[in-house]
Amino acid sequence: MIVADTSAIIALVDADDRHHTTMVRLFDADPAAWILPWAILPEVDYLLSRHVSAHAAEAFSGDVVEGAFEIEWGDANDLRRAQLLRAQYADLQLGLVDSVVAAIAERLGATAIATLDLRNFGAMELVGQPQVWPRDAV
Image (cartoon, rainbow, N blue to C red; front, side):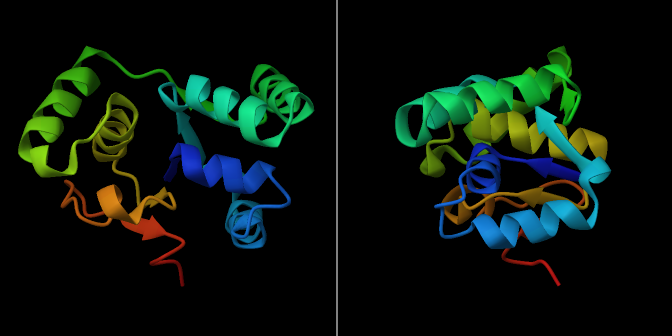
């Protein structure tokens, strides 16, 4: 199971992103294994609308509605764990999205977190020790 962060989805969708080819390769290897945490959805929508195109944002939204991605809606324990991670890694100044992504990856026992955010995800030691893709991808 691969839990996706915002940056991975942006790179996956945006053909002009320098990491697009890598993310497409990783995604296409097992698309059913990818899980999108609820917290990334508004951020992906905003960044696609703002930096890629309204069409890209609409296409992503349509894919979500049609079930192209599995969405993890989480639970209250994810938010509690996210708060603990924010406190534990206060020096990283984790936001809600990254801390929820990490909490969901821990709870689900993810084998990897797909992200380009090595500053945060590369520094955290999470339960289950998920890899950080594409950095750790074989």
